[in-house]
Length: 88
Image (cartoon, rainbow, N blue to C red):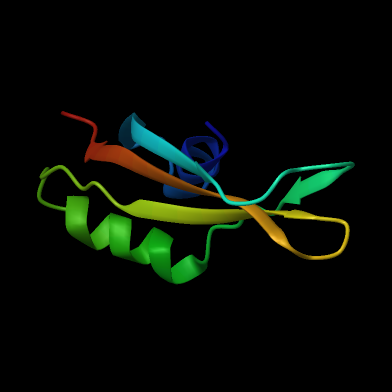
């Protein structure tokens, strides 16, 4: 849900959205601490604004790598959001 929360915060109150789907691929055993860094570049926010300006839905996909302390990717996550401009 972090991707959607970031999008809602940055997209503004005129948008509605939710998590559409997600997938996680486990690539290596995770032993010890793992880290995932979530970010939302300004260009993705602008892309969502432009795509939903006329009220159409927009379903962007985001990718996040989960890495261990050595920097080895142990899993990758793909998340698709559903975003639409809030009705009048």
